[in-house]
Length: 194
Image (tube, rainbow, N blue to C red; front, top):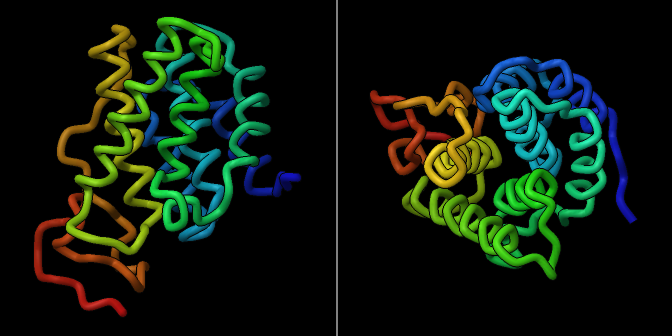
C-alpha cells in the first residue's frame, strides 16, 4: 500500500504547470518553498515529475497523464531504499519516468535496454557525487536530474537544459552535509554540520 501526500499533490500540480526544459528549475522551487521535507521519499516523485515535465516540454507533449501515472509508480518506491538495497529512489524515479515515456515494460526490447542505461548512468552519478555517505536527498536529486538530462540529450536527442557547475543552495540547512565531500558543495570553507 502507498500513501499520496499533500506534497505529492503539489509536486503534480507544479510540474504540470511548468513550461521549461530545465528539470532542476521546478525541483529547486519545490525544495525552497518547503513542499518537500529536507530528506524524505517525496524526493522520488519530485525527481520523476520534474524530469517528466522537462522531457515532455522539450518534445511538445502533454505531460498530465504521464505525471499522474508516475505519481502512482513513485509512491511505491520504499523510503530509505538507498540504505537498505543499494539503489537510490531517485535513480528508480528516473527509471520510472523513462519507462513511462518510452513505453517500456519487463518484456520490452530496446526501450527496456534504454531505461537500464539511464538508471545505470544516474546511479553512477549518485555514487560519484560524494566522497562517502550518508544520504542527502537534495544531492541525489541534483545528481539524477543532471545525469538524466545529459543522457536524454546524448542518447535520445531530447533538448533538455543541462546546467553546468550547479552548486547546492541548501548545504547550510543539512546537519549531515559532507561539505567539500559533496560534488555540489559551493566553493569556500568546509562546513561543520553534525
